[in-house]
Length: 277
Image 1 (spheres, rainbow, N blue to C red):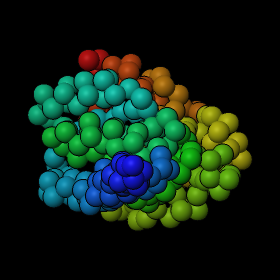
Image 2 (image 1 turned 180 degrees about the vertical axis):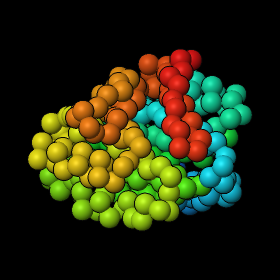
Image 3 (image 1 turned 180 degrees about the horizontal axis):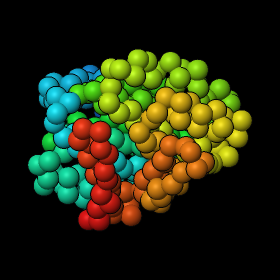
């Protein structure tokens, strides 16, 4: 009579070892797995992008006598083919110093979305700097943006042209944004620059800016003699003033509209061109 143990023992051992083999395989390849869509796990090359790109801009060693030329675009959220097309278009030009991305990099604030857009914009021959949008602040997008790009409010000056980036996502930041005290102080000493550009996502004309903030924002820009207030969010081009004596505002279209703005700053003059591609 055959022993059942002798017949089934090899099969039983094989069956019991299968989950163990699978577990070992997963552990060996753990770096290839995403534990959660809400995790923030970046490579060294994906961290601190704004500061690194600002350093690249400053290394151009431009002088106030040089024409500064930069591109404005916004709302890359989900328009991956259009983003790639924009990058290819801009790389054909040889007259641009850098690109400013006016927020809503993503739809849902997911790391994958941030990464997909950066993979496109990282192919630019020139540096790019981004401000946070309201969609970027959903989910754990605030943490991802801060890890990948850096602070929400920041500034830099190149060749006596100052750029101030302001978080204006009022609702997503519990009505604590925009920080207008910080904005006022960020202008600093006006004798150190010829122009100042304020870049944010939500424009003050939107209720999402916070109605109680719009009047003071306009007053600060007017008193500080800002050259231009630049925004995304509306998905359409618009150039306007909110008050007769106020500063001009420029809303930038989404990348899927297949257009971008080229700003040219020379001496005391500021000009822009709306480019279709």
